[in-house]
Structure formats: structure tokens, C-alpha cells
Amino acid sequence: MPAGPDVFALDELGRITLAARGDKRSVTTDDSAGMFAAVPGAVLIAADDAVIAPTSYREWLNRQG
Image (cartoon, rainbow, N blue to C red; front, side):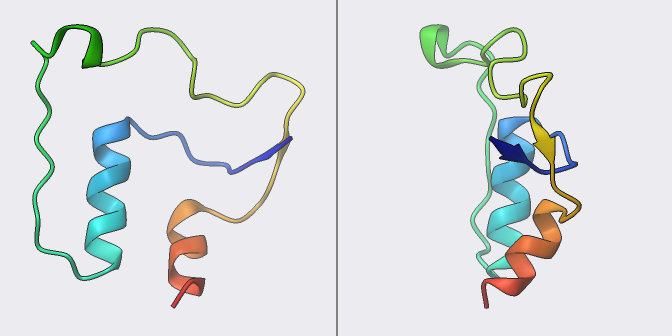
């Protein structure tokens, strides 16, 4: 499965996505959210055998129009 070259925390990914779309909403991280808080480990990181695509997330967003 292909993956991009960037690694982001989920809250940062939300901020980048909203900003790219001109959306003024803010993203708030709640560290006390219990089971909905940050997931430990590398569960959202590409596997060691993933094909890393050269396109960054920001570049991909810009192409979405």
C-alpha cells in the first residue's frame, strides 16, 4: 500500500486540511478524552514495506482544488 512522505499527528493533519480549504475552524486536542484520546504507537504510520510516494500531503491537497 502506498503512503506519503509526511508524518503528522492527527490534530495537525486536521489543521493543515482545514487551512488548505480556507476553513477558519480550529482543532482542539483533548488529552483527557479517554479512549478517544491520542492512539499510542505507530498505528497510523505506513508499514515498513510500504511504497513511499513522493507527493506530500500539502501538495496532494493543493491538487484537489
